[in-house]
Length: 354
Ligand SMILES: [Fe+2]
Image (cartoon, rainbow, N blue to C red):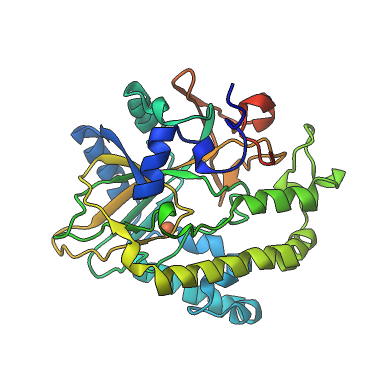
């Protein structure tokens, strides 16, 4: 047996070689699957009926943990000194970006993943178990700018379990192309090897919290809900985490300053299902069509590592981390009380450390 399989942290351990190459060179994988027109209509209707102007993004800014990202928009020190004011600015920023940003409805995850699995979705993956963690709907008209700045989606403590290899099922619900705009510009990993080392965060969690029994659940996994505010604050203010944020800022600047002409934009049809990694650099293109809105639907997929970190069960009051995909059986299973990673045999997980 090839001993390199299932070892190390790269996307090549998550994806089968052919598809890893697509990801590495093009920045995304075309699944070859489109959602049926009826399902697309159902999704659009579902989100049309969700309150106008609902934007779930500002909820992620309740902790002082995104200084690197906020720099240039709201400085980190402003956020620390005047959290109320900074929160208002963040809310305004997000309201300017999207008409609607709806997280965690979780209404279409099972249906979409089942549809994909029926069409051999499992062939893309080298690893056996994948958590279908949560979903996001983004809607904006041409007056809302969306996330047009170059960024990588920064790991955060609300999810508490994010890796550099998270994969997103990305479905435009409308056509994105030259005429409409709204495409995703992606800097493929091959272009500059610029990628945030996100798995450092999992390692730092373990180093900081695994040795304290007060923070562990009955299986010896770190339970983030048991970590007190002081310990969490110390972690966020500690040198290793600061260094990771510094790395984020520097890499983002490099991407903006030296790699802008290497981003790739692709035309995707309404309902076309593609896979991309939100931990590589990307930016949305402005939406140009005044006649209807840009609508994007995403499901975040997390590869399962052998790290001793328990998945959170709720995010901002909603359940998540409930669906487990088994790529060997070709199934998606609902875990009503959340996926319990301690029940998955260690040898079926990706190794955090080789
Ligand atoms: Fe993003």
